[in-house]
Length: 150
Image 1: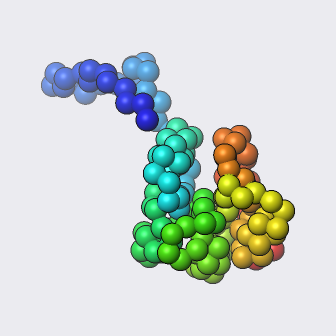
Image 2 (image 1 turned 30 degrees about the horizontal axis):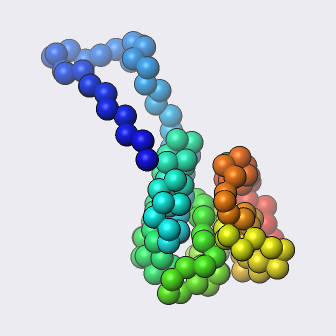
């Protein structure tokens, strides 16, 4: 994880004009993306990628935490590791599909074979991506329109 240390300007009593070019660019948030990944390093990488792309990531480490995190929140997309400690990611995907029928659901796993992809699709995932995740595939998946048959 990289942290940028920059000095911030101290308020001088007058508001800065919005037209000043201070190098900052405000962009609207594209949506909330639930990240369900038990590996902290992978989870942090996904948080950094999604934040950089303008999404609001909601990172958790288990299926149980995921269900609690979205209990009273809207979710636009979810990236779910298929193999999680405790309740499985496949079980979680089916529950998320039921609760968020219009959200984009992406299953991920290091065991990336065609049978795993079919299993994820059958449980409600719109897409399955093998690990290590290719950022361009993930970006495409998140930008796709939800057109699955669910």
